[in-house]
Amino acid sequence: MQYEIHGTSMPVVECRLQAGETVQCQAGAMKYMDAGVEMKTGVQGGLGGFVKRTMMGEKGFLNFYTASRDGQRLALGHTYPGKIVPVDVGAVDYVCQKRAFLASDMSVELDIVFQRRLGSGFFGGEGFIMQKLKGRGTAFLEIDGETIELTLGSGELIKIETGALAFMESSVTFDIERIKGVSNFLFGGEGLFLTTLKGPGKVWLQTMSIQTLAGEIYPYLPMKKQQ
Image (tube, rainbow, N blue to C red):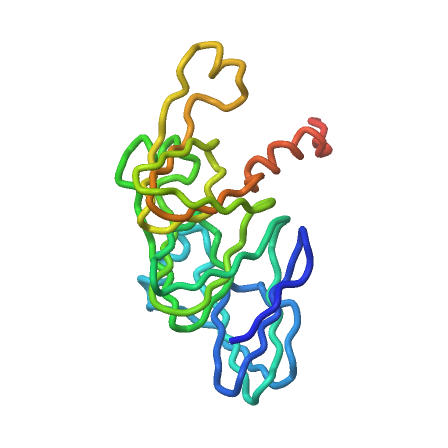
């Protein structure tokens, strides 16, 4: 599958499909397509797959777009300000934040990952449930804000704000650490915990999570007057 990403803060990925090639994507992602592309809506993995997807913050149904002839275009768009990041699934598996999955080849499988550590699930910023990409092929992920890619060596540890993790290679360890010092967590603006990531592997960070963006916008929203 050939593709090209257009745009900046609200991008689209334009895929060019060959005859018989199919792309699976979250419902509502399609922005435009050629007449030679056929759409079908369904569930991957039956009822279990439907339940898993809803638990991962995705819609239960997927859309499947198949080209009837060579060179057909299919454009999929971002649902909030951020970036679309292509990843090559195969040599490694990727663990992602909820809602990250946008689209992929049919050979890529979206699975569920549970945070085993209680503290990480409550305070790590990603919750107890994350997404995992397996199989082999190309996948496209939605990232909040801008994206920073870092490579961690074996045993190398980095501390980030909760909610800043977009996705990582499955070899990276995810945990939390409490901020030391009363004045630091009361007035430092970072809360009580930081997320820690330990290599080896690559991590992709996001500069502003959708939750942070919503919190910044909320004070400026018109409030309904009480009767």
